Image (spheres, rainbow, N blue to C red):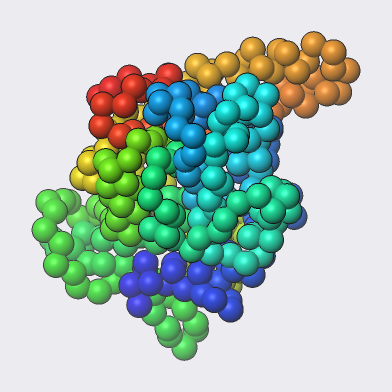
Length: 334
């Protein structure tokens, strides 16, 4: 079985898939995302979304879309910030959650007090102006891996032996040059989604903000990992019980957005994005009247989000917009 097929079953099987059967977030889950670290993360993204809405001409109605919304925390924080800073944004937003997990849909409905409409695919979002946010969404889209051995490329696959599941290689027709030992990851499903969003941005005023861990430029390497209870485990351990993800190739993702017709901004780090959007100033405001314990907590949160050796540099941020749309700060055009 190809690796992307194995990932798709492990993560999305209707009865046994990892995301279909649980809430994986938090200390009792398998990982923690930035919106769960601090409300400031979502607030600053909310400021960016308001700037994008303004650049779109402040339409009376638009689709506020989140891909893979987790518990709904990010959209909730975006809307809370908007109600204070730009009530017209909050009133115009038609909240759209792209989510396949029934467990997480229920959590999102609670977080958003029932506000919103749920879709299985982005393609099901109605036509019209839109803002798309995706935080730690693309890393969970299944990938394929190719390994160079004996002067030839082979595709990594999962097979069954007497001892259980194991990783193996099958011959592959893969024309990219390489050296023995090279591993190349390809994510056609990930790029297909980006191209479809790019096509929508080419048709209607809008912007997309993608935040994920990964690399700004395409390069060989094995980044596929399995996480269970906050520790790394073998890829074939407990199928359907582990989170399977890989680093996002932002160069390839940007090309896919462009193929759909969108303008794409240069990739920056999460640290650069958050600091430019006012992370330090917001945290300083929150600490003004806080006690010592709260100040310490806020400092840890800021370090977790923007620290150079934590999420700050590992996570990258890409923005795509409708052609010739004024670029929301802090991006410049490529």
